[in-house]
Length: 166
Image (cartoon, rainbow, N blue to C red; front, side, top):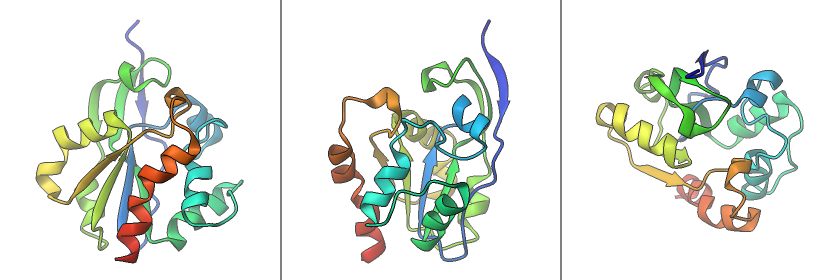
C-alpha cells in the first residue's frame, strides 16, 4: 500500500499584521486526530514558541491560535493534500500545494520559515518562485528529530523573534 490520500484539515492561522509565516509539510495523524496544528504531545513546536516569546506553553487550540496571532506570526503547511503512509515526511507522495501566494498577498510577510527540511524542499520546489521572499529552513520540532534539545531548537529558531524585532 502506498498510503492514504490526506487533505489538509485546517485553515491557515494569520492576521493582516502577520510578518513571519511558519510552514510545516502536512499535519500528522495525531494532529489531525487532535484537530489542530502540532497536536502530537511530543512535538516541541508549542513549547518552543512559548520559550521564544517568554510566555506559558499554550494548552488549548484557542491559546495556541492566540500565541500565533499575538506575535505577528502566520501558521500553515506547504501541502493541501498528498498521499502519505503514517505521518513521516519521507512517506509523502503526490503532493499538491496550498495557495500560499494568496495568503502572503494578504499580509506583510517578510520571512518564510520552514519547520524542517522536507517543508523547505517542498516550498522551494513548488512555491518559492511565485513568492520570492527569504526562506529559512529550521530544524524540525517533530519528535522524530529528537537529536536536538529544546535549547538547541530555541537557538536556531531565534531567527523568528529577531526578524520581528528588526
